[in-house]
Amino acid sequence: MDELIRELRAAEWIKSTRSGSNGGNCVEVARLSGSRRGVRDSKNRLGPVLVCEGAAWEVFVGGLKQGAIS
Image 1 (cartoon, rainbow, N blue to C red):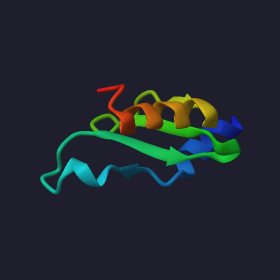
Image 2: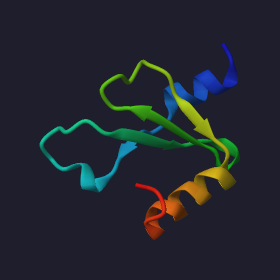
Image 3: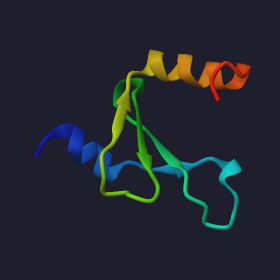
Image 4: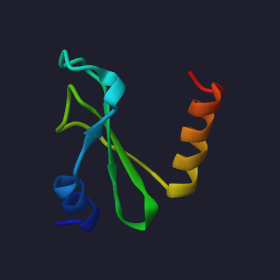
């Protein structure tokens, strides 16, 4: 089995604390090796995963915090 697939299956996936306690659908993020992040849809946990390199993830999160991305 591919190492990345094993890593994604074993990853600890988390949802934002802002997603609420009502079971709302949201994205989930997992920390991966090499500072990468995995992103998936909480409604489809067996579906596709977007893997971002660490630097790209930091730029994305920075843009969210600054309001440049909504």
